[in-house]
Image 1 (spheres, rainbow, N blue to C red):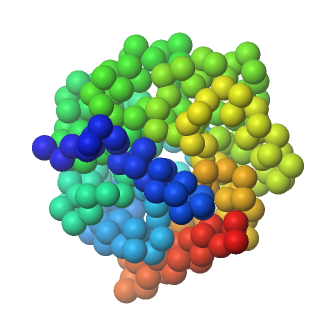
Image 2: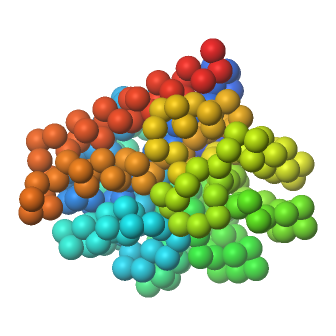
Image 3: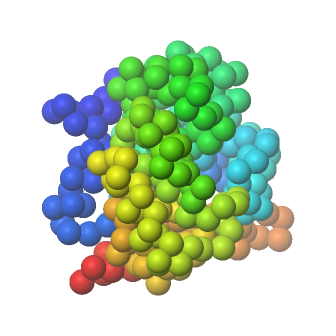
Length: 282
């Protein structure tokens, strides 16, 4: 068993404690499992920590990712076309854990593939593979008994999304069973949409911190190192997904297949983003 809790702390807690001790925000990177194919996806995944990723979100490919923009929708389609499914996604995590015992991995996606797998079986297999938490975008807190509570009972974190429309009345419900960190979606809309202003992020951080002591990660619309640095000045972490997934798409050949530049183009971008985040508060 690859335990997510060591010494009474989860990998996520330990990582944010480390970031706090270093006086900086973290970089959370997103890729879709199996994009553009399982082998290349695994090569990218293995290289993310050395490139500067502090936490990794691994997308669970799904046919109808309604909260995602075109870049991540296309990544899901590429992964599914390459034969990716949930068991292979967990296998990617298991392989990653063979060489990296510290970097938190969070599975992000939709409830349908988990439901089809079976909640108890999925949580057991995910924990054994070395998964640290879940972000499931289509289960509101009113459905916590369905997946959130079983997840927490299994020792995994359940990370909730909050948005600009999450007001002081709604936030207590959203953060009640949330653990690990809170993910603030800085713009209303799908992934890859426009970015929020610094003033909007400052106001959102103030509102969220009235309701939770958990670290706050901010995502949606961060495309470059300067934008990541702006977020890192206010939040506990900056989340970048669509820009990284778009870099994968940019690297592919005319047949949509990986090239010898695919992994390096992704890690070069992650290094730039990490430099922006790490230097933001200096």
